[in-house]
Length: 312
Image (cartoon, rainbow, N blue to C red; front, side, top):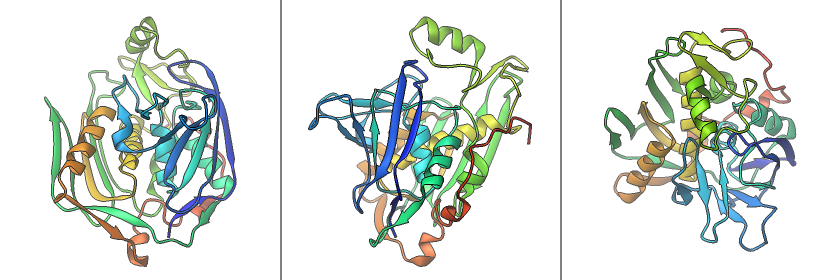
C-alpha cells in the first residue's frame, strides 16, 4: 500500500552551495499525490514542483528540479533518498528557499525525522515500475545502466586517484530497509582542491568539515574520520537512490553505476521513459511490497540520527 508521513517533520539548516539558512517541512499528503516541493517564499500558483525526472534541469554537482514558471529547488537527492528508503510515496515538502538543507551531508537526519514523525499506510495500492530490458547511458568510461530485476539492486563502482578514497565497489539489495541499515549515514565527499575551486566559483558556500568528508591525497581532513571504510561509494549509492526516486515510483531493476553521477542517472531515466517497451507499470501485491526499499522500516522508529564517526 502507499504511504505518507504521519505528521509534519521540520528541518532547519543551510544550503550546501548557497550557504543560506533554510527551513523545510515534510507534511502528509493524500494517496496518489507523489512527492511535491512547494517554495513557501514564492507566490501560490507558481511555487510547486513535482519531484519527477522530467523536471530535472542541468546543475553543477547536485540535482535540481524546476517547474514551468521558473520555481526551482536544488540539492534534493538526500531527502529524496530518505523518502524512498523509508517507503514514503506521498508528501508535500514546504521549503522557504531554493536549496534543501545539507544537515550532516547524508540522509541520516532526514530518515530520523521521518521515522520519529511516523509512517502512515494509506488505503490505496502501491505501484512500481518494472524494467523489462537493459537501458544504458554512457559518457566516456562512465556508465549508468538499468537491467531487469524483481527488486531494486544498486551496484556502484568508483575510482579516485586520492588514496583516501581510491577504488571502491559495493552491491546492495535495497529491499527491507537496507537503505536505513547500510547507506543513510554516508556523507557527501570531495577533495580539498575541489572545495577551493567551488568556492572560487560561488559554490559550496555552506560546506564545512561537519557536513562533508573532505580528503587531500591519503588524508581525511574531516574531524573524526570516516563512518565506514567505504563511505564514499556508499554515498554514491545514496545519491543514486535519491535520483532514481525521481522515476515517480519504486523501480524493479538493477542499477549499475560506474563513475556515474546525478546528471548521468537522470539521463538514464530519460532513456528508459523514451522507450515504452523498456518498462511497465505493475500493481504491488503483498509479496512484491515486501521487496520494496521501505518495507518494514516503520518498525525501526523512533530513532536518532547517527553521531558515529568511527570506522566501521
